[in-house]
Image 1: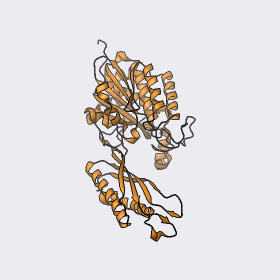
Image 2: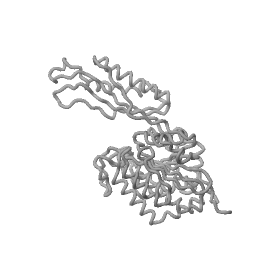
Image 3: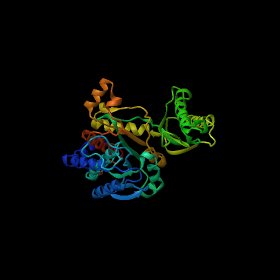
Image 4: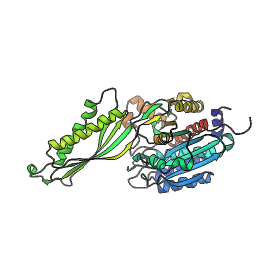
Length: 418
């Protein structure tokens, strides 16, 4: 029996009852989002539900992470990962199950990831006679900070639960529901998030000559930073420099002492990364010097993400199986993304292959209409938008189908005699 034949048989368990359970879980998670390393309710709910499936569950791994393990005889160990932290975003979807936590929202679809992993765990637990090996389900905190995967590894993840043979996972995106997108090789960018403090000398707005104005200093810096990519990075290379926050002052007639900027830098190549970081530091210090600042600016790192590289052979094997089940016409290659992900830490720390793919979450009709009109950029809410709202159907069932098929492709064969 082939892997995709086994997958079809196991997926037959994705019946109306389980689908309803998954939708209820998704709505509950969406309504109760929690920020990075504060996912206490989410972790408790995940632990409770996975214990009920018969998994061996450990909480508090990497602070708030949850690890669920199901050993089913001899065979490979397959790590299935879902992140479960939310974002500091005020939701504006108008959904009946919108966030009840003020200023916090599942704006990146991590509630979808958890729900799909739970669905896969339920199917695998109910069909143990059709596979062998170990399922290692990892519910990861703090992906949005780029710290959760490393925190779990540093908490002796593999020493306590065993080293996997492969790492598998998925991320819902603003793509048509029903599609699965995977790019082998360098799939997600490295990120450097920086905070810059620029120091001036405050005074009354009526006497600017007595001040060293950090607002003007910061404004000049923002404009100059726009030249890093356009003038210092070759057109064949990819880089993004975004100033996402600029804060200075408290009142119109007061020149403040200090301005703060927060930068987000995305790169696909270590040398390009070094070039961009050096340019940012040179510009920040240069603008401060030109403005006559009497104190050097401070540049600190808020968080970083490493490059995420998909293993070519693992992707070919996994996508072939998923395509056999859902149809190869529903598979796409999205190319390398400027987004970032820390799932690769699980693979590099264990020296095992990673296959990580994207899952469509937009109503196909809505997507097609916006695509035809050329209005996708503003008609289709993207991840991190306060309007981001994946459709439950067929996104959840598609996610469970893809992840279950992928897991069975790597787990051992049906342990029953031929």
